[in-house]
Image (cartoon, rainbow, N blue to C red; front, side, top):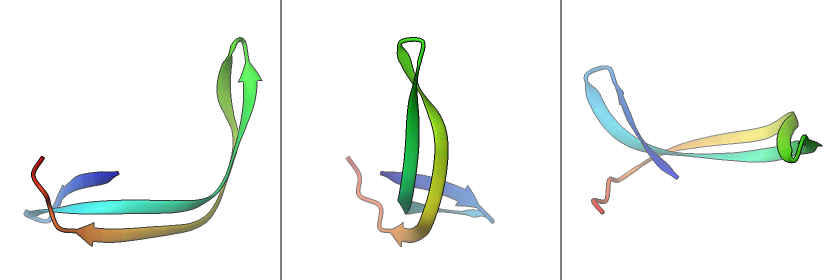
Length: 51
């Protein structure tokens, strides 16, 4: 997913990529996040492509 980021008087598009372990548990017929173990995060400024 690409997000539009606005700060310091300019706008750019960025993609965040995460690697890790997400642990879920059943809770009342749904799912809840039980734990997050983040191993890495990579942020990349990407060119904007209109839809």
